[in-house]
Length: 121
Image (cartoon, rainbow, N blue to C red; front, side, top):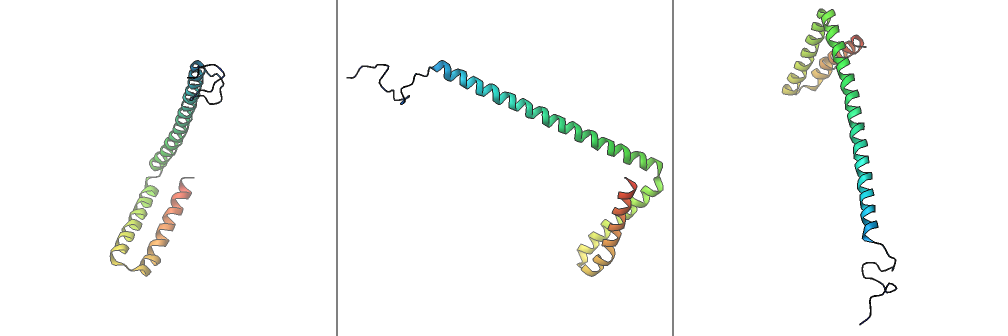
């Protein structure tokens, strides 16, 4: 039997270098800390993006509500046009007439979307 000497190769450490379990533990803890820091940074970034998107959405909603209160007639006409457009789309799908849909629905929807875009700028 061969004696276990520092120069003989270990089956777990074939290079013969002397890594201790302490250095492996410190490497493991450093990797864990780095992963934890990366996760914390990612959480902060996602939180910031959520807050920014939420703030922008709330501003647009407030803008739409204030416009609606200032111009109820225009808003009613926009809603009516959108309802007519959606109704025509649904009826067009039921009857299957593509020519009527392309002649009527597309211009109505384009006009309503253009009007809404211009009003909310």
